[in-house]
Structures are given as C-alpha cells and as structure tokens.
Length: 166
Image (cartoon, rainbow, N blue to C red; front, side):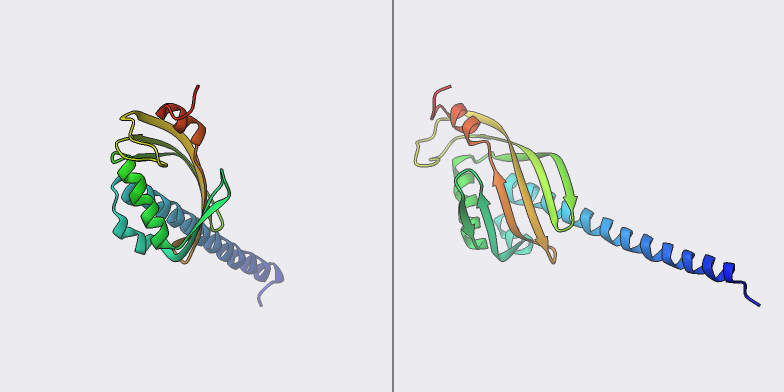
C-alpha cells in the first residue's frame, strides 16, 4: 500500500519539475530576446545591414524618440531614418555596456561612436568624432521588435559636434 507521504513527495517532485521547466523556458526566452537586441546593434547599426530589419522588426514597429516625444511608425520609416543616420555617421557603432531583460522587455545602456561626415539634422558635416552614452528599451513579441523607447544623449552629441556651446 502506498503511503500518503510517498504520494505527497511524488507530487512535490512533479511540481518542482514543472516549476523548473517554466523557469528554464522563461530564461531561454529572455536570453533569446537579449540576443535579438544584440543582433540589431551588430547587424543593423554597426554593419549597416538594413536588409536584416525584415527579420528583426515587426512591419508596424513603433519607435518612441523620448527627447521630443516624436514617433516613427513602421519598419520602412525606421529603415530610412537609420540609412540617413549612417550617411551622417558612416562609421557609426554602438557597444552595449549593459543589457537587462524582463518579460517581453530588453533594456540597454550603450556607447555610440562615429565621425560626422554627412549632413546631420540639417547641419553640414563637421568631420568631428563623437562618443555618447545612450539608452533604449525594446518590447519583443514573437521574436521581433514591436516597440522601442530611445533616449539618446543629444546634449552631449550636439556639444561634441559644435552645434551648441559648452
């Protein structure tokens, strides 16, 4: 005859397996989401591989530009913005300094560097090199970026370009 304590131990064992499986799945999803954000930085921003955007962003992605509250809506509009930014800074790179994931969100602190060799925000090229510290939060659904909140350090960028005084 099976003792009650054996049944209880068995139930606890099964429950612990289920919890472990759920935690493992969540950790896998978080790592997958962080890997997606790393690919965006490496492929799209650092290498300028804009064809990758179809794989990495949803077609109706929304990008919130926090300094002025403006938004970009849609992958094509975002692709155009990135293309223009890379014309202004052809050697643009972003190095992720810190990456944190929770649920469907990934937050990064990243260091941006580049040389201003093209028109930027209506200003002629300065030839100056810049380095800023910026932050973004991404929302990921079904393996694609559906939303981003971007907080670039525009004050530092504009000062380094000589567009505003120190």
